[in-house]
Length: 374
Image (cartoon, rainbow, N blue to C red; front, side):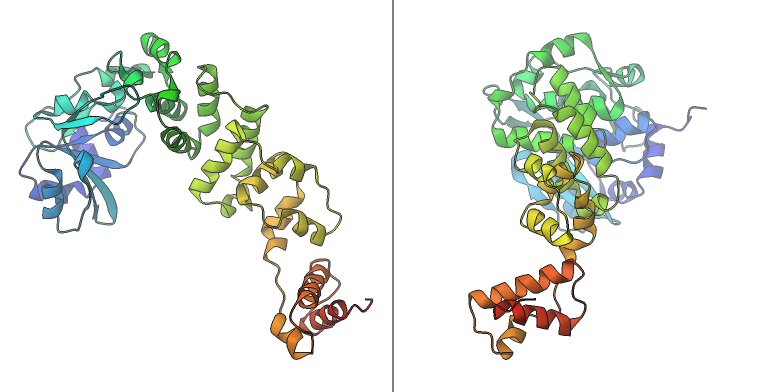
């Protein structure tokens, strides 16, 4: 049965930190963006973004925390009861040319701030004030949520900021939404080349860190906005499955996971195919082949079929010697090539199970350093 509670009441339950904001706010404050959208979708708690019709930094300062300010866009981030809350002053945006960063002016009413947003489903606000409307929804975002549609707010939206096309794929994949027909036509005509490579990559990485990233890249390819590497969409799906399993789940931080998926879908191709074709016959050969390669390349090679990399990531890459160069020097080995040769051979022998313990490591290292046969 649908909830009969007002949106602000449900938001207060999901975000207890709102009480601290309400206690000190003297200007109109609104919850906007993903928190409202996901509330209406019944998806629970999301990141909390607040818009202040007034000075967001001043309100943040009254909360007793030292905010992190971003003056260009009038925003601040504050830690409240262990949760990060983003504050922004209501603003309007205009674009001097396609793909440029916007020129910003303060907005006098929340509706003007909502008008600068990407999609109608993100242009809904819930006021904190008592006695006001339940929702501020000037662009029909709630109806589009109910219909499962993404709709841009104006015809120049993708021209002003082409990265919104990548965001469309991110939201469509995450939420399972379709595109309103006019929005789809505008999106397919988008020129991502009018924004810098850095901005494109940053937005693609935001897509790549999501659980639904493979579908997002598939949508971008369907819309003609990216050209996947050969087999990239299938590889991205395989990588997404791989990163849910031990030891790869633990081997990469979220951004690293995103970079693997981005490289899987779009490239560029590095050395992962060569690594995937390598078939080591012992642990030391595996370590020799994998050493020095970053985790992105390793994960791609594993997704391409190099099962031995599970052992490398889980076990072999962490193997170290109990001895070091000082032990060999103390035994009479001079610094230089012989020292390195001895330590390398001792590590090889340990990886391959030929030595066990400090004394055996030292014996193997000394024999190699002195050119003696095993």
